[in-house]
Length: 164
Image (cartoon, rainbow, N blue to C red; front, top):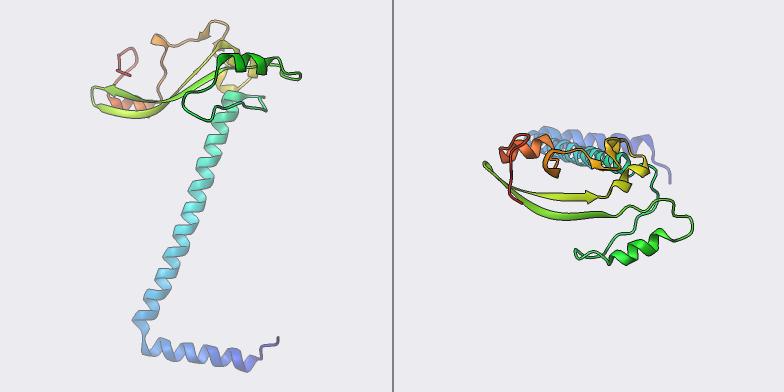
């Protein structure tokens, strides 16, 4: 299908006439389109940023791990299943990990977080974030580590207690 130069000029002529007749409507329509495009772009950028950050954390903890066995419910699965999975040919390291959503209570309020617990075998996966996690475990005072933002929102400092 061929579009002649005359048809394109006619379209521009019609639009110019509409613009002269309804300038405010056209400015608002153009602004709305620009804002919509900007919002879509912002959502795409933030989504990519969040996904990238989560991937970095997983890589930092899991290291060279390539397979994961995950329970379908909050109840987890029997410890014997993890033992059997460790015996599967080709499995070099099996690291049990406990994840649970919990509520933390501090002097300045409460916060819902995801608690993660692991055995010392986690260090065998070679993750960058597990370098201080040796045979005796991660060296933490009291056994709990909180990101600084979470600790600040709860109003607690290093060495202080919180309620789980």
